[in-house]
Length: 486
Image (cartoon, rainbow, N blue to C red; front, side, top):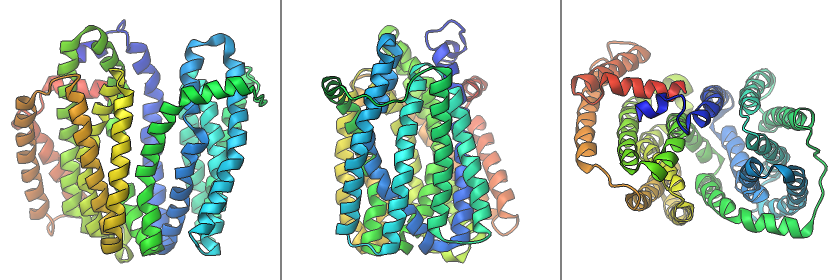
């Protein structure tokens, strides 16, 4: 695999380089986003951050119905059908204008049926406007992706977060009103829309005028539904916990849950970066070199375990220290939730290469089925656990859903490649041993060093142990370095 990535003429080299911009932007974006959310949480308190997080989560579920997989379809079709680009773009924009009206009505009816107070309704209505803008921006970027250009989107994603950070900081100096803080997102989203639309109009000379051809639009929707189904399942699974928490336990519980959720989610750029580089290789190996596919897949599992297990173990041990020092005592109830939710991380990490493998092997329908079943488990678990355990119940439900997803993906992936159970098991036992030594170090220096130095020292000790126990070698280090470099 290392040699494959290093070859300048390999089939995936161009794709890997093309995703480099976006991968780096994703890392920067997540760092800025997490920093801003952490600052926001400490400034406005658990109840208001709960309202802010709920409004975004609520409309996020509807946003996937608005797009209905059309953006993914656009990228694919534009990449191969050069002559019909304008027809595709005009019809998709027209379809989304029609669905926008339907979705807005659906949101209005739903939020009123759920009987929320006027304050929450206003936050949701404002988030709706941002959602509409983001949906059209997503379509514009999808068109540009079809042109094999990720550089503009990469720049815009970072600028978006910088605008949010700066305007959010200025706003917080004068008010802690979630409504005004959501306006910050609206301003940043408006920039993204104008920028992406300008690139399309002036660089690629594509008109953004909607034109609806009923027969062609119907054909597009029929082709797009598999993309839509998977996205709908994922979006509902990822946001339904906040909706149930808000309804059963209140805004403060959403605030207590949102913080551990954001901390856990922040680390997902690691498997995203892996998959960005590995997916083209998986596709090539599946078609031409099955043995390399097996070796590469098994290696990716081990590498992601090496990253994820110490992060989960370390944060779980240091959860109280992190919460109290960064977010202060108002978020004390988030400590247990974080300790539970962070153990989701290794499971989530493993689902990334498995999902990429299934897609590379043209088993998207099986992957979609797995996501759909996971969504059902997530809904049932949240309905049962949240009324009893509140935000802690939501964390447990999240782990149960991820375990379900991982088991289903493991079974499906086994149809494509054979797992090297012996090698994975051997490395896993050594990773756990290295983690135990790291955890002992964290406990030993807990009262002797500043908590940040303690984390750095114990993390360094873990890395040393990975080489001492031969979990990692110099060749492995070069491989991982190459993945993130590309």
